[in-house]
Length: 178
Figure 1 (cartoon, rainbow, N blue to C red):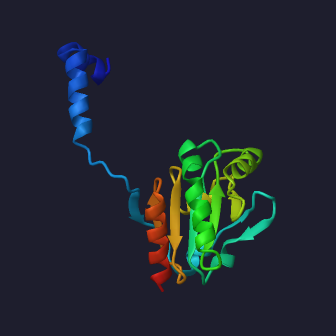
Figure 2: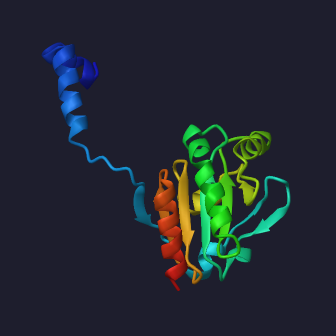
Figure 3: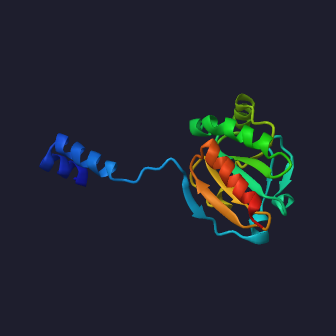
């Protein structure tokens, strides 16, 4: 018999719900995404290849020497869809200053193309990571997630959604890094 069933019998449903609510209420709550350092630096961070959603070859090393933002998303992800206007704005505001690459996964290419069309995110390049190799390389376990790579190749992983102000602030900070 499971631990939850034993607890329910001992305390009753109402008491168990109360204990769970109190436990959840004590967890830290933050608007910001979880910030963690990725274990990638310098040229190793660019050691990946892929295909664009349009089917063209893509070399990770083409990003070297320029600040880069990788946005990991899935075509069925409603949070990704909701934050897409922020990525469009980022693309326009930092055009020519950064590489902005969407890395789509967890879905078929046709769904990825539909997402790009629906969200009007076609103003920057998107990779179709159907195999998950790029997601695995950067240790991405949820979407949306971001990788911010300085021009010297130091990468920082952000798990979760970013507000427009957080996204812009982190990109501005990225431009200041060597």
